[in-house]
Length: 470
Ligand code: C2O
Ligand code: CU
Image (cartoon, rainbow, N blue to C red; front, side, top):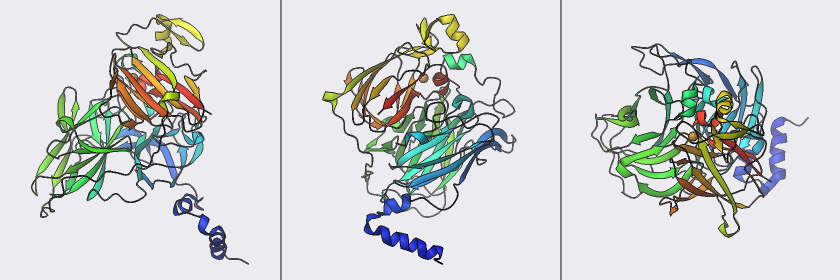
C-alpha cells in the first residue's frame, strides 16, 4: 500500500519544475473550506459603560468580519453558510475574480437561501487592500454589518513601513438604545437622497478604538470605507501621511491635501504615516461627519523610546495589475445618470416598459442609467476580451455617486474635460453632481459584470446595470 505521504511526494516529483511557488500555493487543498457563516450576532459597537451590545448580522460572529489575508496569486476558499432569515451572497470587492465566484446575486449566481451554503473558491491575482461584503439586499445586509477586509499581500514583502494596520471604517444608523434603526431601513427618503447616512462611525467595529503605537514608527494604514452611503474624510493630520495605493493600486507616493483622505463608499486607500508624537501622547484620527470632525480612533503612544527617524522618501509598492489600453480602438460608451430628489427625471424604463414618475416612485425605482431604472435585461455594453472601453459618465443629478465596476479596474482619464490630475487606476470613483468623467478599462475578464453606484440605496433604487465581456 502506498502511504498518503509517499503518494503526495510522488505527485510533486512528477510535476517537477513546472510547479512554480504560486502554482503550489494555488493547488487544491485537502482540508474542507473554512466556514464563513452569515448569521445574527451581537457586537459592542458603542462604549460598554453606557450601552449593551448591538444586534447585528455578522460573518463568523464579527463585524467587520475577520480580515481574510492571502498573498497575491493564492487561492481564497470559503464556505458561505447562510443562517440569516433571508437569502444572501458574498462579493469580493475589487478582485479580478473568476466570474462565477463574483457573488453578484441574480447575475453571477443564485442567491443563497436561508439554511443553504455556497463554496467560494478563487485566486486573488493582485496585491492590494480589498474587502468582502454581502451582495444581496446589500442596502439592508451591509447596514446590519455584513462586510470585512480582504487583504492581498505583495508577492515580495514590501518593507517600506515597520508594520501595517487596517482601519475598517463603517457608518451605522442606531436608535437611542444603540440598536440598528430598523424602522428607517428601506426608507424612500434615503433612497431618493444621499442614501442611508448613519449617526455612529466605528473603526474596526467599535466607536473610538485605542490603537497603540510607538513613537517613531512608520505604519502602513489600510483604510476601507465600508459605509452604505457616507463619503468619509479621514484626517491624518500630524502624521505626515503619504498615499501609496488607491483601491489596491500602487500610486507614486504623494502627499494629501490638508492631510485628508477622501473615501467614497467602497473606496480604499493605503497611506504611510509617521508616528511623530512623544511617548505617552494621545493623537486622534478624525473623520468628517455631520459637518464636523469627530475623533474616530485614538493613536496612543506607548512609553518605549522613540524609534530612529525614517528616511523621508517612501518606497513605492510594486504594481501587480497589468492593463493595456488602446484608446484609438476604444469602444465608446456613454452613461447618463438621472433621478433622485431635486432631479429632473420624469420617466424611465422598468421591466421593458416606460413608466411615469408616480409609477416609478411606487416601484421604488427613482434613479436611472440612460433612462433605464435598474432593469437588468440588456447589458450597458458588450466587449470582446482585450478591447479597450471608454466610458463617459455624466452625473445629471443633484447627488454625488460612487461608481463601481465588478471584475475590472479602470483609469480615470478626465473630469469635466480636464485631464484628471491623479489619473489613478481604481475600481470605484466618486462622480460629483453635474460632473462628467471619462474612464477607460481593458475588458479583460470574461463574464457578466455589474456596474453600479456603491451608495447602496441608489443601487437598489435603479443605479445598477451590467456589461458583458466575451
Ligand atoms: Cu462592493 Cu457591487 O460591490
Ligand atoms: Cu449614487
